[in-house]
Structures are given as C-alpha cells and as structure tokens.
Amino acid sequence: MSQECTTENCGRLTTLFLCTACIVELDGLLEDVPALIPLLAGARAGTAVVRKAGSGGGGGVTGSKPPGSLDAMMLQAWLAQLPERAYTLASDNPEAGRWLHMARIWVPQARSLVWGPEDMRVYGNCETGECVTQLKADRHAESVTCQTCGTVHHVGDLIDRLKEKARGNPMPPREAREFLQKEARVFILKKDFENWVQLGKLPYVLERVTTTEKPRKIYYPGDILSIFHEMRERRRIPA
Image 1 (cartoon, rainbow, N blue to C red):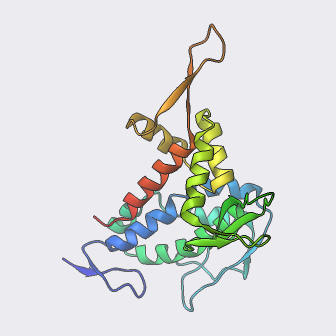
Image 2: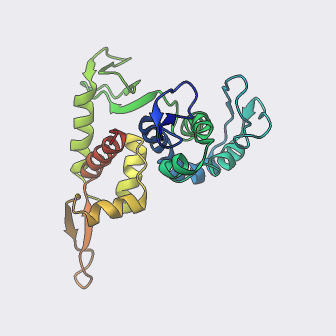
Image 3: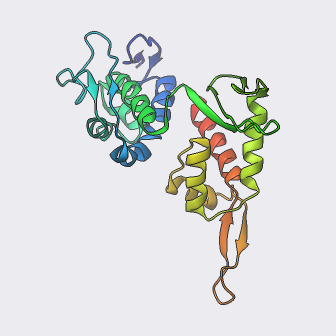
C-alpha cells in the first residue's frame, strides 16, 4: 500500500518509508561516511548546527537539542549512528525521514571540516603563462575565472585536464586513491576499488619492482576518477 514519504515536505508516494528520490539522496550522503569518521579524528575545528524548529535531537533522532557548535569528536560520534544503507532504513524504520534530515546536517558539516566548504570545488591551478593560482568554483558552475590573471576556464576542460594529467602517472592502488583524495577531493573506498577491478572496469599496467619479484598491477588515477563519477551517477538515477 502506498503512503507518503516520511521525509519532511517531500510528499511523494512510496511503499516504503522513503521514496526513491530520498533513498538516492541518502545513499549519496552515506557513501562518504566511512571515510569521514576516521578523518574527523584529525580535524581541529568547530561548526555550527543549522536546525529546523522542532526537529529531533542531535545525539539521535529523538534526543535532546545539541549545543550551538560541534567539535569533531561529537560529529564523529553522530555520524557513527547513521545506517550503512538507505534502503534498509527505508524498509524498516518509520523515522527514516528524520534520519535523512539529520544526515543532511551532519554529513555536509563533516565534509566541510575535512575537505573544506561543501559548496566549492577545486579544479587545479590556472596554468595560464606563469600563473599558478588555484581555481575554485561552486560545484554547479560551468566556468571559473582566475582571480589573478582573469582567464576564464570551462569546468569541463579543467576536469579533462586533471584526468589527462592523472592518467599519465600510473600508481599502486593505495597511492592512486590518496592522490585523488588530495587533488580531486574524491574519497574512494578500498572495497569499491576492488569491486571495480573484479568487474574489469579498470585497465592496468604491470610494473616490475625487481627482476625476481612478480610484476605488480598499477592503475591510472584518471581511469579511477572516471569510474567513480560513472558509478555515482548510476546511484543517483531512480530505478
């Protein structure tokens, strides 16, 4: 039997406690949580909570109202309470909409502490002449203007340049994932990487460390970044 999605102001009909769109949104938030929890241990900043009037408590969906600012330890503990999969929550928990509401608060705050402001993306350096100014823009922007030399760059071209640069330097799996976290602010879980390898989605080259040891497989970060975006888009498309 169909009912309204439990997310506040959603109104879509569903046979679960979350509609398809909200499940996809929650999965998009949850995919960063395994990476953010350990990384928050090194964060040394506070962040304010923006809450709707009458919403549930900070330590859980029905707890007491949290303080006006959160330290990394508190945020780390709250993220640990989130479910691993949105579909499980949508199937079993009548409070699923409240959990989505809290995930919308906690996950962006954690991303901001670890990776910087949620609404900005870094697209490398300008590289016009001798200019090396870092290029930042809203994640929805189609172009970005260099603050030093005034050159206008198309975001698509910058992404292609990043992929091309990255693909020119094949690396071992761990180094490739760390490179993408630093350069593209993309965190790829080890188990996801291994799944993509098993599915045959990632080409590799063989590197011989010594003449006696078996060659090891190394991967192009640009290929990994492409597969990451491809899989992320698939998860966002409602079934």
